[in-house]
Every structure is written in structure tokens, then in C-alpha cells.
Amino acid sequence: MRRHAAERLGDEELMILVQRKDAQALEVLYDRHGGPSYSLAHRVMGEPQAAEDVVQEAFISVWRTSASYDAARGSVRAWLLQIVRNRAIDVIRRSAARPTRTDFDDDGILEAQEAPDSTDAEASRRERARVVRKALRDLPQDQARVIGMANFGGFTHSEISELLGMPLGTVKGRMRLGLQKVRANIGELIS
Amino acid sequence: MSIHDHEPWQDDLAAYALGALSDDELTVFEAHLRTCERCRTELRWLEPAVDALPASIEQLEPPPGLRKRLLDTVGPEADRPVGRDRDRARWHVGGLRPAFAAAATVVALIAGLAGGYALRGDDERPAVTATTTPIEPATPAIQANAALVRDGERWTLDVSDMPQPGSGDVYQVWIRHGDRVDPSVLFVPSRDERASVVLPASMATADELMVTREPSGGSNEPTSAPMLDAQLN
Image 1: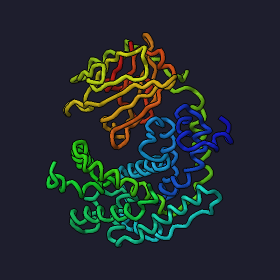
Image 2: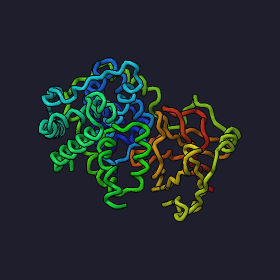
Image 3: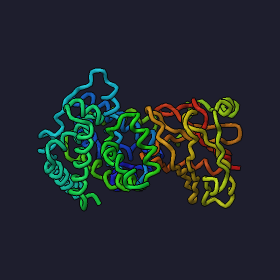
């Protein structure tokens, strides 16, 4: 398939082509979602080279195991970002010199900068990002911190308990309350 | 399950959705999840919040070299039907039998809906025999459900209740024609243990379909006993 034809397809249609080993389809998917993927990997890994490696491995994994995508379970974008996040966390958890930063509720989340948009889809994503950031900003800091440490830091709740010096039950409760609030605040946007 | 039985699990739900359970906790919680509709319902409600979190972070421009490296890697693999790579060694049935023999505790799921295995959309091939083995010999047999679906020339393998292979592994489909077995697509079930796998058109004339657990990236020859084996004639 030619590039301009692939660009007109939706993500789910591109995934069918990727399953058939159409490199143009993967290229278009990368151009649409490579930026968010790299941003997420950079957020988790904390440095550019490791983030690049994670994104490359994730997209190659998509190329070779694309049949695992299930459209009934959510968007291609969410699926891709989950793969990137899981791969980054795997790398961090296997690392002997694992960082112990706990500042995942910092301004990097709360005051994120968006690239200029040129399409309706980008405008929609910016609005989505704005709503999600507001949902996180509205959380009590202790809830935002445990969610950030789990999601972007790859820490288990037991590790968070140890790092922050608080009972495991407290960490679990804050995770649950915080995530429920985020879900409630983004409700209509997501559905 | 009463609400009191359910309460102790509720605080683990968010940790599970955020990927914050340890491996041991994960195993225990997922066993509970399979039996608890209340938890599954709450999890389905929470998951969009987790999916949305990456939208909150600063958006960076990936280095241009990353795109080139990715495309250079996939380019040589492009535009060839999966499992038909000419440089891949053919795997013959004779090499398969030891793997079958090594399988511990084979649980037979016999053809038809009653056995948990369905074949739909193909009037010419109504009978299917499927066998499945436990992921780990020490665990109870996995009663994975599988359906081979034909829609015109499109073949799909739908699986449910099939645990993720873990440890970076994948499941790989193998397709047999006569005495020749070809490696085919790779897949990893989603967290709710489901997958829908599009199969190559050569399925139309296949004699057998198998699924094995393989290292990331798949294998040229199977390295484990089949988890699922469907005789197609």
C-alpha cells in the first residue's frame, strides 16, 4: 500500500495491514503514535537513549505480534502505549541500578507542554490531555504521587510503601481513591 | 461471593490496573478475578483512567534516527506472508512428536460447543479436535476456550481464558499441511486472557493448527509442547 493511501486509514485498519506485514502501515502508525510513545518511554526511563530503545523494541513487538491487538478492548493508541509502558517497566525492574525517584507528581505531569496541532484529531488529543491533567491536578498530592510512582515509575505498591515510609494499606487506599477520582473526572471524555 | 468476601480484594484492584502488584500478588489476584464479576466490572470501569494517564505527560519529539532504525529493522520482513519466510527452516511433523510426547497431563477438549471448542462459519469442516495442556504442570489444567472462525477467506482464531505467557514469551501458531509444519503468527492474550488472531489464507487447506509458547519474537521450530492442537480434517 502506498503511503498516502495508508494515511487515510484508521488505526484499526492499519493494524490489519500490519498483521499482513505492510511496512507502510507500521510507518503511519509510528508517525501518529511515535511521539506519545517516546514521551511515555522518556518519562518512565528518565533518559533519551533508553527511551529510544524501549520505543524501538515496542514497535518491533507490534510488528511481530500485531495479532494480539483486540479492537473490542480499546483504541490502538492505548494498546500501543500499554506495550511501551510495560516494556519500559520491565527494563527498569530488571535493572540492578534502579532509580528510586518518587517525584512522579511533579510539574512534568501537571504543566505539560503540547506541540502545536494542525488537525482535528490533534485538537481532540490536546483537549483530552487537558482534561486528564486537570483530573490529576485536582487530586490530593499524596494520591497523585502513588499513582505516578506506580504508573510511570514501575514501583509495586509494596515498594512505594517502603520508599514513602507509609503502611501498605495506606498506599493501596490512596491508589484506589485517586484512580477512582481520575476515572470519574474524565468520564464523559473517555466514553 | 458476598460483599464481605469481595472487600479485601477491592484495594488491590487499582494496584492491579496500574501494574503495581508483585508477581506473586498478581497470580493470586488474577485467580480471584476469574471468579469475581464484581471485580471485573470495576476493573473495566477503572482501565480507561489508566489508559488516559500518558496523555498527562510532557510531549516530546522523538529523535529522527529512531524512525529510521525502526523502519530499517522491519523493512526486510515486510510484504511477505507471515510464516512463509524463505530463509526459515521447515519444521516437519517428525520433529513435532517428541514435543507432544513430553507434554504432561494432556486435557482433551473435544469438538463442538459442549467441549468448549467451537468451529464456526465453515460448513465443510464441522469437526475439530482440540487438546490443551497446562501452562505449568503443577497448576490445574487450563480450560482455555478457542474458536476457529471463517468469514469468507478470512480465518481467525479467537481464544479466551488463556493466561498471558509471561516472562516476555509469546504464543505462536503453527499450521500443518500434510507432513510440513510452518511457523505462523505470534500473539499475546490481553489482560482479560482473550485474543483474536488473524490467520493466513493458507488455513483454507490446512490439516492441523497448533499453538505453542515461545520466546519473544517467535521461533523457527517449536520449543515447547502445544498448548492447543486442532485437527482440521
